Structure formats: structure tokens, C-alpha cells
Image 1 (tube, one colour):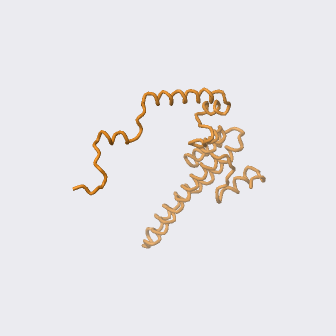
Image 2: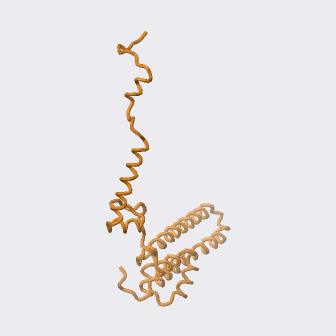
Image 3: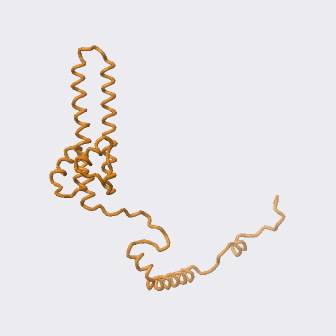
Length: 188
């Protein structure tokens, strides 16, 4: 039983109505010819020449935004935060007269030196509190130590990023001290 009122067509007659019947080889040759003509025309246009040298397509933004190259001063300032006060001390001693590296190196020494002093003092207080039989003091000082080290980690990240960007960023608590120590009143 046929629900369709149209007469049945066999497969051979359906193929005649099924779409494109042109020659594939002929259409690909036409496409290649058009593409080569377009490339020849674009080769003489200056915006396409510079774009081809840079690997970009004109009229479209680059896939990856290129950052400014990091010069020696910015790299040295960023590395002065790398190992805390130790790398800051090394860069402060061997940076020469570069004020930018010396600023970040001195800031690294002051910031991470204070954190390391607190890291040494708090365990000594734990030993002194052992006779008090107050476990809540131990937990409070342990929490204080964790917060101080978290602040140190955030300061480490901010210092590296800001030094790499090329800014005279002042870390909290030590930034003003460093500017006074270096006799700079112009850094805001």
C-alpha cells in the first residue's frame, strides 16, 4: 500500500534531480586558476606583503597579542623577587647604577626579609609558650604565620608582575621605606 499519491520513481530517474551534475575536475581547475590570480594580485599590494612577512591576515586582528619584549632592566627587576630577599640582595649588589633594578631589589630585601624574620620569631614564641599549656595560643600563632606567608606569596606575585611591566610599584609597608632610603621623592 502506498501512502503517497505520487507515482513511484525508480533510482535511475531520481538521480537526474539530485543536485550538481557538473564535472569535478573542471570546477577544481577553475578554482585553482582563480586562486592563483588572486594571490598574484595580492602580492603587489603593500599591506599584503607586510602581513605575509608577519604571518598575519590583513583586516583581521592577530591571533595572539604580542607583548613588549622584556629588556634587561625589567627582567632583572622581576628576577630580583624570584628567590625572595636572597635574589634581591644579589641584584642590589650587582645591578650597578640601574635605579630601576636597585629599587625592586631593595624592596624585595625589605619585604621578604621582614617576612622571614616573622617566620623565625613565631616558632621561637611557640617554644616559649610551651609551658603555658594554652593550645589556643599555638593555633593563633600558627594562623598568624599562615596569613603572613600568604601575604608574602601575593607580594611575590605582584612584585614580579609589576617589575616585568616596567612600573615602580610600591609594595605595602615597605614601598615608602624604600623610596625614602633611595632618596626619591618623585615616585608616587
